[in-house]
Length: 230
Image (cartoon, rainbow, N blue to C red; front, side, top):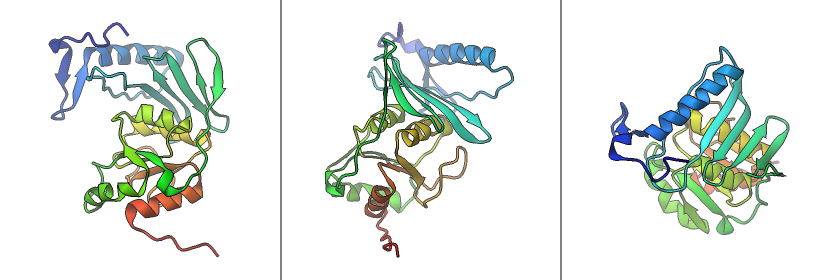
């Protein structure tokens, strides 16, 4: 963490996309991680993305191992707290602390919609849903955004928020997060009900404690009405 809150103006630059900033700390971390991964997994395809331009302790290092197009392993590391949320497909999710001790991660228990606290990033949804979504947030106890999905996935996997909603689905953000959340017992689906697949077209992603909660949240957010089963 030697560069945290110590970046000079020359350490921040704009990438190809207007307003997309990257720092020397981002690129140095990526170079180190890529070198270690290439040493451990020669010939593996590595894809990286960076974002740590704010002086807030709300950022994370995220990585996922992809096998046949699906996430097989995930880590979301908090450099400030020096702990890591980890998941292996079929083996659960856990938090490994700075002392080396681990504890299992589990999503929260289902609650009534009016008591739910969620995290939502709705700006990338197409119209008219983009405009309609914020008007529907008062149906919940609270809806916020940390502007860091790595930290949001960690909170949800630990049962500290009830749902996550995302419109833009960059694989470097969601390939680790969806696996972590799912292995912590959560129900993550695209808004059309399909499974998340990194790189596939996005219909929006919703993560909830279970399938029933997912339907109730989806209906409130989109204005749909799910027919009762049977």
